[in-house]
Length: 472
Image (cartoon, rainbow, N blue to C red):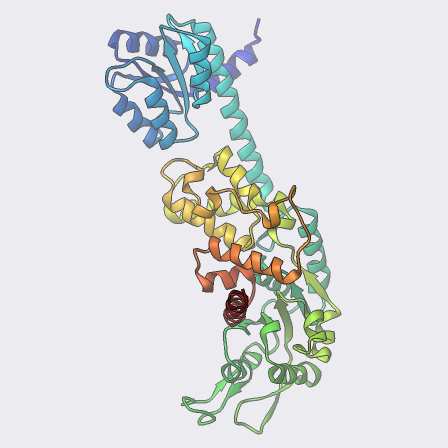
């Protein structure tokens, strides 16, 4: 016997299960709906499959109990269309001609249960009570996750993995001191978010935070952007303007992609760090500035120094304090948290009550290597939120490259064989290009290299292929 508290809990859970009964016999629909309503379920009925599909599409029910044999549409076809409209729908099929083979086939196609007519209502109620427990557990889980979510954020950065907790801990320690910092990590990993967190927690949080992308500007424009210029110093300089170092004086300047900066510009940056002074382009006047410089790069600056592409003195001025932000492939346990964050963001942006991802969509997300890191993940959720027609995002809503199994490099894990680094790089670049539909600008962003570097590599690769073909 159930206690009073247990009976109340069952009744409360049943009230949250909305059911649609579908049968071509009106008397059967009436009987089922009355019986289920008396048992405490919220139930509606119809003899029209299209009406039931409309309720599925609009979220008017969470469970459908459908007959198999109907003149307008058989139950298996209805099951298929229901799951297309809403992959999270639970469909219970009924039949007067039960067999184990037909039950297995129905379950294989996605049915929640397969019952024989005349219905055993006690079994049906047990099935519905099990679903009510699932719905209640999910609701409690979502509520718990929402309450825990603020504790898994650090200045707007989401993460609970050990790698990210180390980043948060390091940022807290460093932020108290007004010193220069180098942030390393792959493109799209969130280096600018870490830089902003360092500024917000610093003693100069009320001062300005200026951002400069060093890879987006040629030297002449970059110099003007950082140091400012006076009127007439170059063609187009119609007025005198301060640079970012003056603009953010007393605050922080964030130099993104510092590894792309030319050697002459690096020399000028050394002077800013060493002497705390700048000169506007075209001006002999020296101005004193006091700024904290946070630099970020996706390159291995030690290797760049050895190759002569990065100044050693500049590297050592930054490398004393370095924060490495891990790529998403190094922190897969953070993917569900990030998905939750982006779902909330784009649900509000697009006015859609998205509740989560289907299991197969979650599997596809976890199997992907995310070469574009968090930026790629956010773009995937954003586009899926636009195309999704149900409360749950399914595999078909995700970008095309996430729907297909990923290519294996050099025969996959079982067929692995050693390759020269140049060959591995070539395979990886070709793979990223395919994922980006041969969009070279997007591929360069995902790879974390400049567009000119990608064009140069492809040109060299084409020349080698042509030479090899001519030699053959």
